[in-house]
Length: 393
Image (tube, rainbow, N blue to C red; front, side, top):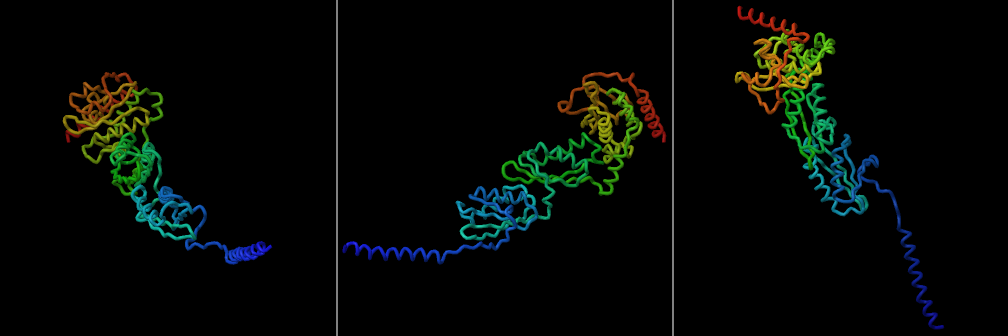
């Protein structure tokens, strides 16, 4: 009995002590919503990160998806396994060197770091330069570049900015795309633009290209010439549906001989010069022939080489699956036989070119029985008469 009393007196104080602890906890425990010093706009603007790699990706995604908002929010998860203060600084610095958009148009990335109870929260602000980021077209692969560059030339844009995730193209590759497109489509613009290309690299193979087109014309002049090109009508174009490729070639060459004067001026080097101004040098005449052949659905290519050791342009034209040389400038100056549908052997007498860079021309062709041959001879005769009158004066 005595032992039981002793145990009772020992247990009672212990129970009272435990009960008091419970009362103590309940009395001082309270919960309330934390009001962040940052005004969070919506859950969509908060990016939760759990490690440095996610933090780095989050910063870059804020740059890529920038929508004009003042700031974006990154919330460090309670299980974040790094130092938020140190990591956010490193992530912002890396973004400046690993992101092509940053290299192109971001002046600075700033942040404010706040502690939210036990977590951290960062407000990221991207300071863009005056360059309009919204004008950047995003592509995945460099194979898509030609499509957007050709559209820019066709619409006579002054600037084009393309961000490509995977690209090995450099400045000269971009310039070649532009030159090749214009050469194949000489009526896409009144003249071939002078092009400057800025290349900005990001991580891996990401590249941003800023392409500036200079047409050497005011906007008013460019618009006027574009309208003149659009208004150009190739006479009797409807009749060409009845022609074979040889007859189309005869007709196109005869049209240029009859309607275009040869010019030695360097500035008369476009299809516009030949078809609108009515005068062109060898390059302009060759570009005009390509433009006409495009409308006639004939394969026609530009050749650059030398004639009598002087720089010169002419064409290769495909007829019945075989290529022939056609030099409109020589046809105008020396007669049809001197420059119309010749093979390599005949051309090599006075011409030089990179033979490995062009299709072989080994066939001979008789065009005297073709439709429009009389028109070709008539054009040839009129040029001869004009030359004689000029020499007499």
